[in-house]
Length: 262
Image (tube, rainbow, N blue to C red; front, side):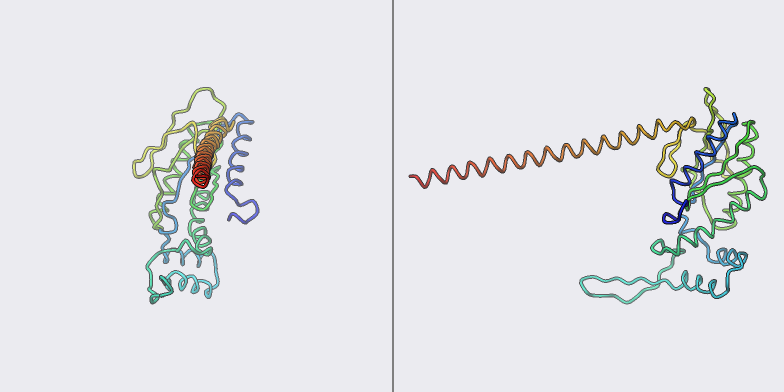
């Protein structure tokens, strides 16, 4: 994904920011529900993946290759030029292969088409296992209701397809220009309550509801400041070590000269 043009993490963030700013310019409100697919590589069921590949009309030879790729995985251990016999490992999808990423994306892509087919005016963005569902309208209550229905469809689909969402990383935010903070919330199917936040961290970018990037800049400055402090402490340590070593060498040299002169 990172090597594909306009498919990087920052491109996904810029798309969301652009839509939010355009919505604000029309005096509407954009509300986002952020979901994280829990251990995406470990929750890809082979049977479900094969069904999806068949629906996509993938060649049978390629489907058989995917089966072989997922079922016939082995591991080799080597220590000090001694290599053990290959052992078969039981796992869903290995993260070591670039093919695994493609299979994960194929596996979860049906989620978006299913939601958009049932809910009008809903839009989505994703980067691997990070998913954003959002609606942009003036009526905030309708936006929240739409996202509640979208979340219900998403969790129902996930349960049928052996996929799990990480509730601790689920977030809700309104991008709007109101001075008052909106307190709407969404209750998921497992009774997890997602309250609206004034700032979120998505794909390594801090986004606040006014999209002025003030929090992001503050966080980056704090990170750089900590790095500079660490470098300064390291520099002080090396300077102390250098001068102490030089002083020790100088004293040893003077003592040696004194002994030679006796």
